Amino acid sequence: MFHFILNIFPNFHLQLMARPNADHFSRAVRHGLLWMLLAAAGTAAAEKGELTFCYENENIRPWQYRDGTGLNFELLDRVAARLGLHFRYQAAPWKRCLLDLKGNMVSGVLDASFKTERQENGSYPQHPANPDVADPARALHVERYVVVRRQGSAADWNGKTFERLANPAGAPLGYSVVDDLKRAGIAVDDGAPTTVDVLQKLLRGRIDAAILLHGEVAALLADDPALAGKVEVLQRAYAEKPYYLMLSHRFTREDPELARRIWSAIALERATPDWQARERRALTGRSAR
Image (cartoon, rainbow, N blue to C red):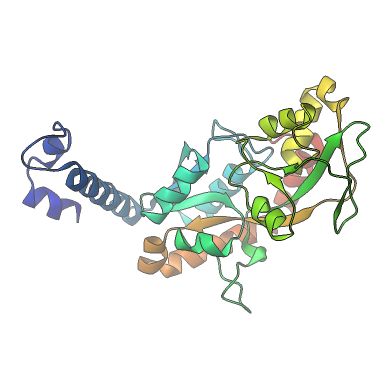
């Protein structure tokens, strides 16, 4: 496709950069062709064994950091070595990652929990007994959502329902747990993009409970003793979820065998005693670094 586009439009790269009122290309046409060009380049890279994965440009400790370190990258680098591939990683806001996955601009997206509607964006490893859901055995990792409240607050979670919430519960924008809370009939404030922002809302009394990923909360409390004295994590977790490497529909359609091998290699690496010990150390030490 890449050579086809260049053969038809030999000055394509120059026309893409033309002013919005250029005679030859409207803005919409230039945008569409740019997507085609980048997608073609991505396909060519995949044919050479190089795949590009997008990840959220926020810390989700110990699994991934903004700078491209963390357990997810360590695990996938092991997978790449096992399969003779090369993975490249690019950071972006979460919604941008999903949009680029849907547009086949990247081969995959890291750390996505399963949501039925997300299957419009890309593919999960299918469960062998139920192809409508993802296979937790081939997830990157499993993480808990914990409930955090202000020290001395009466707000509580009994494992089934919230008690004594005078204000909404809070969770980060775009996280799958937001939909879970809403389906349970719980008022949710999901206007904050990060765990730190949600905790600030909790401290200001705008929400009475924060539902957050355990690893990131544990790291924040370990880093900030003052914060640890202002909030407390309840013993009962709200939920436990597997997190996956999603792959683009184009990739799984054009090379389903390689997609299967990547997901299977994730499961094989996670099952090794070496990796299990690595994960335990990171979780106990509250950091992957």
